[in-house]
Image 1 (cartoon, rainbow, N blue to C red):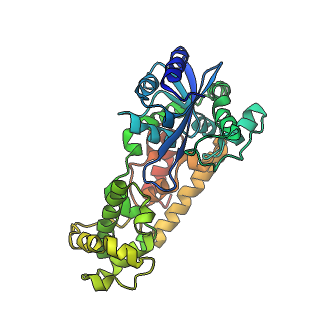
Image 2: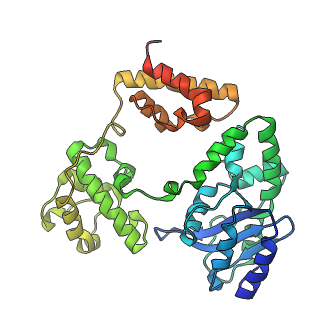
Amino acid sequence: MISDQAGLANAISQIAGSPVIGLDTEFRREDTYYSRLCLLQIATRHEIFLIDNLAIPDLAPLFELLADRQQLKIMHSARQDLELLLQFGDQPLQPVFDTQIAAACLGNNLQLGYSTLVEQLMGVSIDKSQTRTQWCKRPLTQAQLDYAAEDVLYLIPMMERLQAQITSSDRERWFEEDSLELYNRELYEQDDDTAWQRVKGASKLEAKQRMRLKALADWREKTAKQENRPRQWIIRDSPLVELACRNPEKTEDLAGIKHLPAGKLRRYGSALLKALVHESGESVPGNSLARPGEAERALLKKLKLLQKQRAEELKVEPELLAGRRDLQALARGETNTRVTRGWRREVLGNDLLAIAADPAR
């Protein structure tokens, strides 16, 4: 356990000598927009360091070390951790070996959990009792410390086994291309302009209503960031959709909207009206959200059938080859999707494009 500056300096000297490390974080996000780092775990082949960042004034030397591109970072389901650690650096950490991505390339579920993979590869059942624990509270209990240590204990040996299986399966390119996506900073940046598309109920709106919803969702996203509170704590989805439909012009018009209590009205009412007044008037695309027509549904069915058949041949999950949105985009006539790039285009994308170009074949 590292909880002071001197201890961190000693840990860094040991970690720096390791060409490969296991890395994980514990964080809190239930009541904030941005995740709060509560503990950072690092494993070498010989030691495990639990770094209490809340107790250490200067973490810069640690993140300078982690930015070293000569040191391989082993992580499981790395995206959330990399997003969190971006608060302490300019670019996502790399190189990263994500054991979840590697397992998916070998036919496992895309969301395979760490404990399940440990049991599958190492034959060890690990304690999951601390999954929902409060990591920002101090002091940490022994059970919490043991759980945190186990989260990195098996990363290096699992990487070695997965790497060998990927090589023997001739899927190095699959893994390398999917790993490169982790280093794209845009992956971790929420786009305010597309926030409206993540609002439940957006697909039912007409063009003018979508324009108003976009303005409202933009405002909510910016406000959530400024106040560092979850967007649903600012205003829930359902009142945003109702506001977009009603298009109120005066404060008294806001009354009676479900899930928009008086306290929210007092705090945000004028801002909501201002957002509606200042909506850009630019057209907002609706095809990606609209219900497909009969021809599109028939084409989508053909694309899904081929996706499933190819996945069975390759012994992988269908969603690894093409996501639902990829297939929907192809059915709408779009050609630049994840499945039409890289290794996916070779194993499936070209055939999907041929069917989309000639649905009658």
